[in-house]
Length: 286
Image: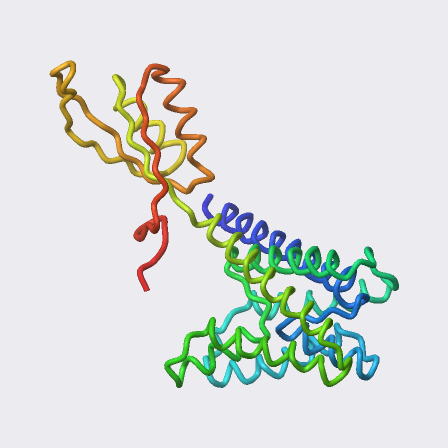
C-alpha cells in the first residue's frame, strides 16, 4: 500500500516543480527578455547571449547547465540530484517553446515588467526549492566553491548575480537597464525568501479543554502530529487539567482549530508563531 502512495507523492512533487518551471519561463519570456531587462543566474547569462547573438535562451540554458552539471558530478558526486537534471531539461524546453510563440512583451512599462517578471521568477524558484528541486545554474557553482572554501553559498550567488547584471552595461551602455536588473534581483530574492519561509513557518498551539484525550487522538490520527500533555492548575477554578501542546505548520493550524471547535466549542486556545522547529516531521538541525 505504501508504494502507490509514494509514487503519487513523487508525481505530485514533479507536477509542482513543472508548474514552477513554467511560471519562471513565462516570467522571463513574457516580461523580462522582450523588455530588455536582465536578471541573475544562468537565465541572465543566456539572456545576454541572446541579445548579443540571437541564440535562443533555451539552448544556452541547456548547454551552460549541462557543463555545470558535469562539473558538479565530478566535484559533488553522482548523487547530486535527479530533480536538478529534470528541472534543467524542462526549463530549457519551456524557454525555447515560449520564446518561439511570445514575440511581444505582455506589458511595455519597464518598471511593471521588472516587478511582475521577477516576482514570477522568484515565486517559481521558491516553489521549486520547497519541493527539494533546483534550477541548477549558480546554485551549482556556489555548492562547488563552498566545498573547498568557507564561503556562504548565498553570498557566492549574490556576487555572481551582481557580476552578470553589471555585464549588461557592456551591451546596452545604459544605467537604466542596470538599475532594472538590480530591481529584478532584489524582488526575486525577497519573493524566494517569502515562499520558503511561508512554507516552513510553524505555530505552537496550547489548548485548554475539557476533552483533551479526544482532541489529542484526532490530531494524531487525522494529521499525523504528536501532542504533548502538560499538567496545569487553573488558579481561578483551583482544578488540575491537562493542557495540550501541539506544533504544526502554519498552513495546518486551521485544521487543529476546527478539530478543537468540533470537540469542545468552549475550549481556550493560545496560538504563537515560532522561529524554528527541528526534529521529526520538521526541519533537520544542520
